[in-house]
Image 1 (spheres, helix red, strand yellow):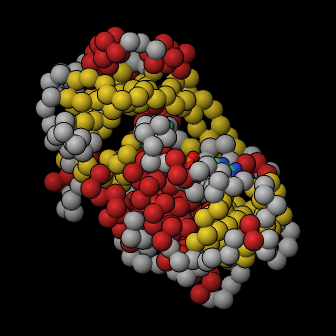
Image 2 (image 1 turned 135 degrees about the vertical axis):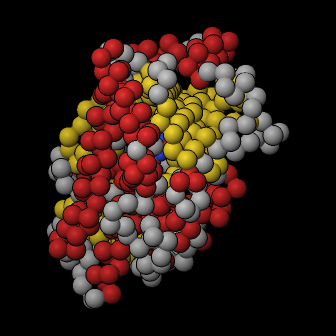
Image 3 (image 1 turned 60 degrees about the horizontal axis):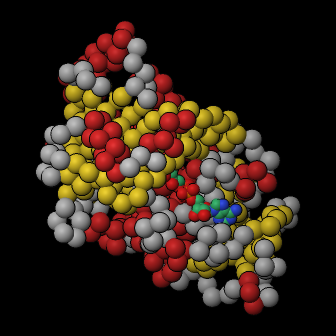
Length: 416
Ligand SMILES: Cc1cc2nc3c(=O)[nH]c(=O)nc-3n(C[C@H](O)[C@H](O)[C@H](O)COP(=O)(O)OP(=O)(O)OC[C@H]3O[C@@H](n4cnc5c(N)ncnc54)[C@H](O)[C@@H]3O)c2cc1C
């Protein structure tokens, strides 16, 4: 699709996606793969996405999300930077109970992968740039959306227009698309912030991801690929009380390393932070509806959850795969895929999964983010019980791998 709104002519496409982040780009690639014309309007300059200053996070990518990207031809570019997750160990403070998930228990390779967000974004952007039917408009913003007619009309900040049968809001937690459609959301803050940085440690992590429940919140150690010099790396997601986060970020290197090591432990030898420190406020948001006439929401625009289980993006990828499937199937039947009946199928399909995981992460965070003695005992016994009961352990693993429930074709690794 070569037209451009800068030429003065409106861009006409099947689907206009507002937000070219990881969920929006995945949806664009999925629709392109089935022959639909797509416009992606992104307010940032994607030229900045590979820079170290862009995003310090890694994402735990489920086996299901990997299959989506594999089916869309985007995975191979990320694979060299993806560290397989072979084991997951969950502990509760200094209690002796350990919940251990071992990938060997389920046939079919790693439980997931740890990939830097910058690498995911860059790989998706390259795939978008090479897709024949995607028009990426960036940096551009949408001033207004008119959804009253037989097509939605988007007015852009440079005077251009985009006409589409369906508009998708993939514009993240503060979604302007959701707001402009008058869709309310439930949201709250956890009073916690996540401190994120990359650390080097003396011994290899052997593909083990760890989650430690500490008083202020979970402390996660996520295994990364070695650096260019062979240094062993992990990313930490260190949850703290929101009001204390700035003080930790301001510590000098020696004090920061001392505080971090006290939580990290010495099981991987000496450990030191390398690179910038980042922080993210933690909250929950759930849109009351994912759809409106000629409009659908995906990813964090529809639901933002606590990162305690590393699943927020994975939910957004499943949204993209499910929405692409209902749209493509409707189009093959000759239906107007902007119709409410089609969009309702998408909402029905995705809502339960998203709300269930939002509720589960909310409860786990509340139950584990405190040091009350009786609760700690019950928690420890709970971890030990799940650890001893194979079927429960395998159920958790299949959920975390994104391979449970009614899966879209792309998540099963099939073409649309
Ligand atoms: C500390 C932390 C750790 C996490 N770890 C994990 C993990 O391990 N695994 C996991 O699955 N999830 C994880 N998550 C969640 C994950 O980061 C989010 O769910 C994911 O980034 C959401 O992707 P998205 O594409 O929906 O939204 P976003 O990443 O927010 O992207 C939205 C895009 O829309 C653009 N945009 C915004 N407004 C507009 C506009 N008005 N017009 C045009 N463009 C616009 C933005 O520039 C951006 O490119 C974590 C979150 C946090 C905070």
